[in-house]
Image: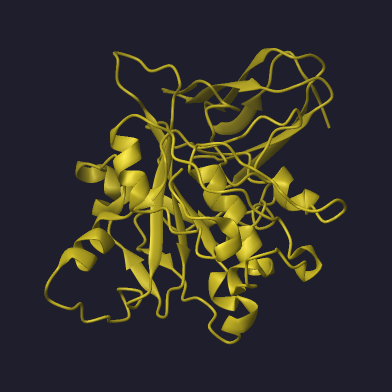
Length: 326
């Protein structure tokens, strides 16, 4: 376990301890959590702490999922926030987690270890800033090398806005690929409507834009406002010009547990989708012209399915073999 006890507060502090556990090849975990304030139920021996309020509950769920360890829900009967839990799991309860435990970004580790205080300018997030990074990669890689699909940044307690350098993304981004990265904030896919122009509609940033993390809310810290967090996903682009965003209703939109294999090819991107019978999975991509493409897959049986987003000559079209759609 990488955290302290939930009941005493501050069990969100896993960014540094997870560095060691991850280096040892282990999956760090945080203590059990509540998905809601549970009617502010008293816990014997534990004082109520602000991170037990609703903003903290949402943060704890995100961090538990991104730790890659078990997610222990310990709500009282009738107090579980089902919508929040659903953003972390598939219909059968499988955790849709990233491929590596989330850890504190390098620049913040360096800042905390430095004997020279940081200037705490607007681009640095302030002295209390917490920013963790992780990524999704193929569960089955070619040539023995993992292919990173997306990076995820969890940020909270930023007293100022913060600009993230691509050097803080791990595995590191090399060469000219940095200019092709684009990012979006988790919003369950609300901003990415089918057929909309991705950048103008707010679905995603323009290629190469600075990765911007918003300042936190310190207006009511007794109610845990400072624990309100943001999840920012950073996506690569295929050589064909397609950019796969995945399942945007989930915190980890390109989890290998949902998409075991993703391959860019000369005309698009091909992927394998895993789900359970009766499950509906909404998959989002951005075509080479910059338009959002969304399809809902209605799975009829529990097995792997193949899906391809493909550009056909002068027009953009989508090919979805073997499924029923609506």
